[in-house]
Amino acid sequence: MAGGWLVRGNSQVLWWLLATVLLSCPTFIVNELVDRGDVDRFSWNGVHVKNEINLALAGLLFVTLSIAGLALAYFSGKFFWGLSMYVLAMMYSLPVVRLKARPVVDVLSQEAVWWAIPFLGITWGKVDPWLLAMLTGFGGCVMWCGFFPYQMADVKADLKAGLNPTHVWLGMRKSLILGFMTGVVAWMLFLVGRIDRLVWWSWAFVLLTTYILWQYGRWMKMRTLDVRVKSMQSYVRFTKPLTQVMVAGLALIYLWR
Image (cartoon, rainbow, N blue to C red):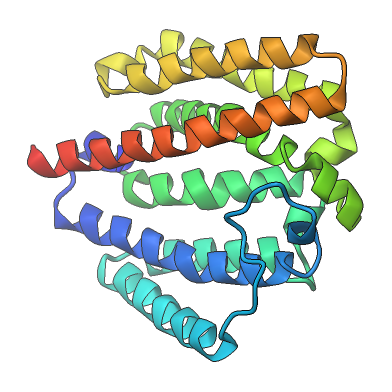
């Protein structure tokens, strides 16, 4: 959607948006089915699937959503972007590779799947390369500053499951510093690039990032892991629906204009 604002896109943007949403659904199914075997057994988040499920229905949804998502990516002229997103998202969860359990690549794969590929798929070749690099970096920093605490809130479950994602590998203190610095870099790119002149609603995400930076400051001062984790869990409960409303509002504004 952010890319659509930059290129003043037509129906192609909407088809690509729908394709990325559909492609994310089967990868989410795989992630939930795999995680329920280890990390979700210890997770604090009751949203995760913990009871028995109908595997036949899950398989049908997986196939249907995969075909629909790839078909829409093809008809929007973004098939290889869509396929790349789909394959990388599968590699994030599938046990043979499971990038989510490996340091550094877990971060890079999520940044690519949830931001870079959807954004670049609609803007590649239509925006000045330097501007495109700056905007991609800005969006990536905003995303990771806000999303990293979601990962850190599950640190106990990851440790019990024997996974080694970035926040386990770095440790809590260094992870907090990394998350904080991504927010600082986002602010710097916003100011240097005058991004608000390109997309006025970017102010909403920068202000949200400022709130998140304040939260990082609080977490750094907390002395025990238990207190930090509980605070991060409260943060997730608040920011997850908030960001969903913000994105939905942005989509409605885009459609209305």
